[in-house]
Length: 58
Image (cartoon, rainbow, N blue to C red; front, side, top):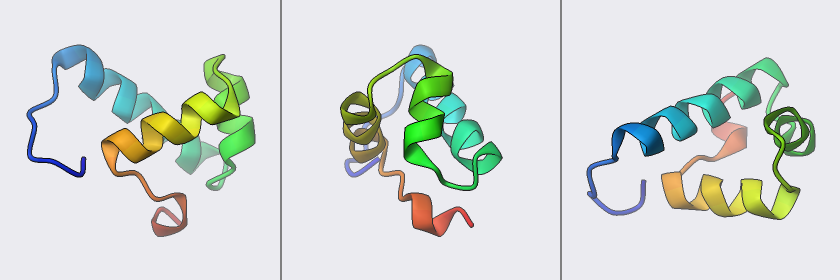
């Protein structure tokens, strides 16, 4: 996450689900968003919020 804010348990679960999905899909944001049932725009917004950079996962 870009700030030092402590994540709530729900936020931590969401972040972990996004990270797992991206790792399972070889950093494919579109497919991960589909798997999670969210739009690609929402996926990018959540990734930005949690400081997730897909290219750093491979």
